[in-house]
Length: 351
Image (cartoon, rainbow, N blue to C red; front, side, top):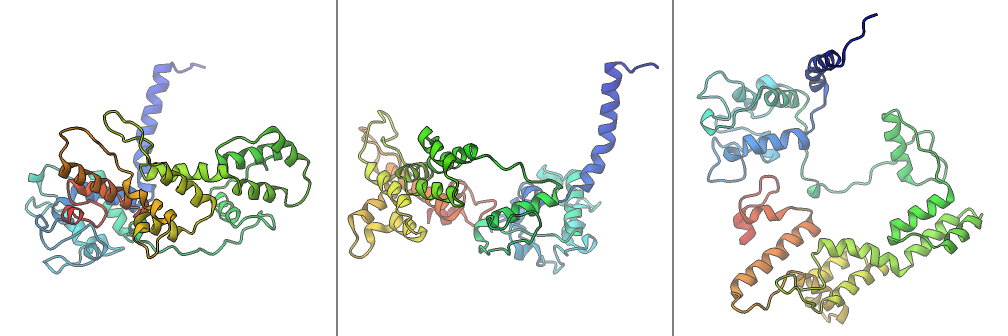
């Protein structure tokens, strides 16, 4: 029997992949956030996006109301489930260059694959997904699936359901030594001590693990570990951040954040006190310290610095940071232009 040489094997593999790829692409489900919104942003938003001055044809594709409404022509832009009746599909597939979108003069024509993607999205129902931070949280029903032990966490039921969908099963149950190491690292950022491991290994009580979790949550190390994630997001620094980058007295705010986690301060109070703790009626010293969040920008005492420039830079830093950590929005984009995804304009950012 004659064996194929390596070059011939490689050629055969390439041919097979070339034949399979288009079919695989057709069978792949279309995801709005992954496939459609970035495509619309790149090819359509320049003329049909948030900028009123550049918007044409009375058509806005960055919002649900516009995408599923009508253009100036009174024709429906997108008809879910029917690509042939959708103005969007008609215009991107038109043979008339005066009708085809995007206009050839813009230099951003849609590829055949992109057109196919939009057609399949519309034909499959044109599912539209709003920005996650604007979606009201709703507690889902816990799925009833076999293979979940009584007394297990509700999270296990959701994991089990997904595993069933993927044709997978749970990994083997972790032993006690592995379990205490995982939970200690998760909650404190530190490995367990030998004494803590030994105590857990000999504890045969049914709530042995719960006792470990309670002990870790009550530890000061818990607040230090969890607080550092928030401090990173708030752009906290022990130093000024410019030039000499020398030490500054910001540690009381850092300690307040650590203490807030250790006290299990409710999230609404956690946010209010950081944004406006010094403005609360009869504000306590702790609440005033919490408003140090508003001073987590870089500072400078450089000779010759322009006060107005420094002030503007600091305000921009806080607006962007507040939008990111409190609202789940990327306001930084609107420093230079109207946002392509979030509903904010450059004028609103500086207004």
